[in-house]
Amino acid sequence: MVVAVLGIGLPEIRASLELSEVWAGTLFSAIFVVAACASWSAGRLSDNLGRRRVLVAGGLALGAGFGLVSTIQSYRAAVAFLAVAGLGYGFITASVLSLVSDLLPSRRGLGMGLLSATYGLGSVSGPIVAAAIIQRFGWRGATATVGCIAAAIAAIQWLRVREPVRAQAVPRAAGAGRPGVMNRNMILLAVAQFFGGAVFWITSSWTPTFLRTAAELTLDQAGMVMAAWGATPIIGAMALGILSDRLGRKRIILLGAFPGVIVVLAVYGWLVHPLALAAGICLLGLCKSPVPSLVVALAQDSAAKGRVGAASGLIMSMHYVAALTTPVAMGQLITWLDSMTLAMLLGSALAFAVFGLLVTSVRETS
Image 1 (cartoon, rainbow, N blue to C red):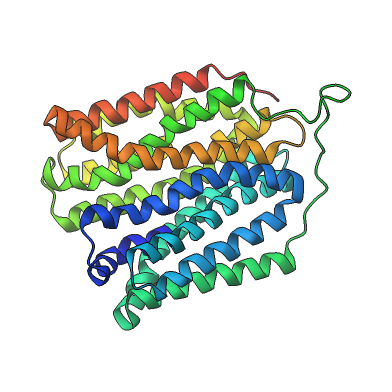
Image 2: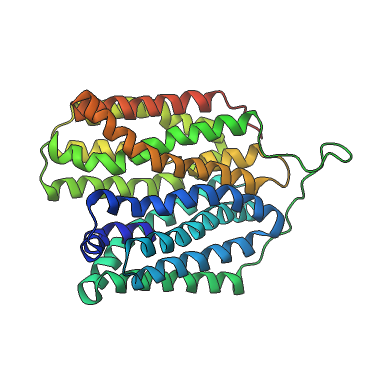
């Protein structure tokens, strides 16, 4: 909800602080730069200090940082408070992924799919909540409201969440200390997550512009297509997560990766009619729905005993790195090729193909 509210309220925030489009865009960077760094650290902290402590600390930081955005009068204050919110954002994702893994060790696909579905619901409900509040109380009221929601959830988690007993890491040898998170599978999955995340961020950042310019859809038609794209992963993450518990994570991930290349070619190269584009975008959302949920689950399966938190944090950190770099890289590619259609084809198809090849190289564990 935080990211969605910031997005829909950005025009009002930009006008209030008298920011250009470029400087307004850096407000998102303030969240994701800190979240990328905090996520990996939070995973390690949750392994050592416990999931609930890190989760609640993240919720309070997110609530305080985003809530205080409602009081800002300057760009520097906005960046500072959004950085605090980004710290909480990174803490929450790493710790909640690890906690659900502890709660459902033999059904991690279901657990990760459930988290992806609720994340999607937050993305859908955020703009609705923000629009209703902004109309009555302005953007400051919207940020304050969502900040209070985050703090209230953190308080409930502190009172009601009960952690299961977690496995402790086994030392490699006497005096060798605890084993690290990095191994062959983890490196492959971290890089794969960057390219899989790139597909998501390319679609979310540049596809609306493609639909309105290259595909010549109206604003309402483009909104309809993107709404369909946003809803599909909510269903896909749950369904594919359950299937991955039965058929294996790697098989289900690859079921979307390589066909996703064909879907990209159809969406950006062949389809023209708004309904056909909506169907193609929905199929694209289904193909990418295992990212990042099942990549996280596969990494958790491959992690050393007692290092599930660090593995979860690493994968999500790469997801945020993709969020920071991919939209800018695509902008440069569009400028260089002087063709949005060709740039979207190359960028999305290449990212999907590399993602699939990297996952193919992973040795899946039972």
